[in-house]
Amino acid sequence: MSSDNLIQQAADILRTSKNIAVLTGAGVSKESGVPTFRDAMDGLWARFDPQQLATPLAFLQDPKLVWDWYEYRREMVAKAKPNPGHLALAELERRAPSLTIITQNVDDLHEQAGSKNVIHLHGNIARSKCFYNCQGDPTVVDVSKIEYDKAQGPPPCPHCGRWLRPDVVWFGEMLPVDQLDVAKVASISADVMLVIGTSGLVTPAATMPELAKSQGAKIIEVNPDDSMITRIADIKLDGASGEILPRVLEAMGKNA
Ligand code: BV8
Image 1 (cartoon, rainbow, N blue to C red):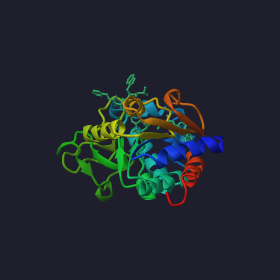
Image 2 (cartoon, rainbow, N blue to C red):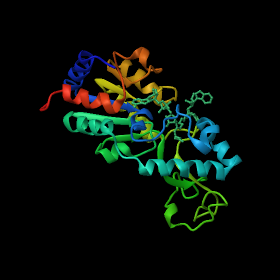
Image 3 (cartoon, rainbow, N blue to C red):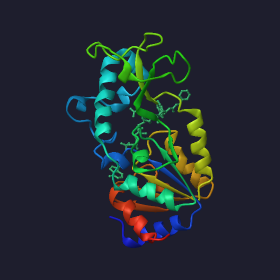
Image 4 (cartoon, helix red, strand yellow):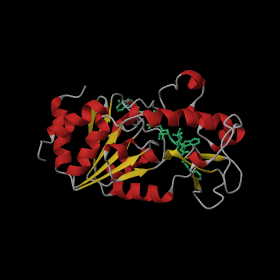
């Protein structure tokens, strides 16, 4: 667990920063009950590796398996509520002159907690789109309005009749260029980047802290373990984000 003086050092940097960038990964949603990619999925899904399922090829090889995996994860995300870590980040945004959250997560817990300026690098698990984007990229479709036989596999696109898929970025797929560009600008212009709950394994998301640091930003990492980012962190706060972030906010002082 991080000592109080490391928490205070982080708080002092944040309090005096104009542009704050925050990179979050699956760890920030863990205390909301959403398993991280490092956690083995439980039960039925324990025998699958997420990196093997979250690909276009896996979907084409077995659309029903991949669609059902996302339905299972959607149910978990739908039940999840923001945890104190999400809420602390929303409060920090209210206090800071400028704060941008760059998230790798496909849930909307940052928005539910009240964060406004959120960039989603990897899409949104609750949204579906035509696998072929037949009406343009992305051809988003509201699945709740489609009657289909769940035993057969994914719902059909109402425009072209082919499969729908989750509107997330799979391994081997390009990230949305507009979101990636805004994330790069936020990283380059940051005085400090908070890196929370990410193993730092997945690129190009994991290159944002290097980008920020190359432009002089301080890197503050919040993670109970070490990650690929730890080696460039100026301050490493060891612990769960739901525990650490409220302590940082408190150390910033009530009327900061
Ligand atoms: C691209 C959406 C280029 C889907 C996700 C070799 C071969 C092939 C490809 C590659 C390769 N090497 C690199 C690549 C590129 C590849 C990649 O990075 N692969 C990795 C696996 C090596 N990247 C891509 O494919 C990307 N696209 O590069 O396109 C391109 C160019 C031209 C043309 C075409 C393409 C696309 C990557 C996006 C993949 N989609 N998500 C879905 O969700 O189903 S990624 C997915 O995994 C998540 O979104 C997240 O980003 C990632 C998991 O990472 P984390 O969030 O860090 O989570 P993780 O479980 O790893 O770690 C959790 C951390 O939390 C841990 O550190 C833990 O200690 C900590 N923690 C735990 N509890 C807490 C906590 N922290 C705080 N509090 C707690 N309580």
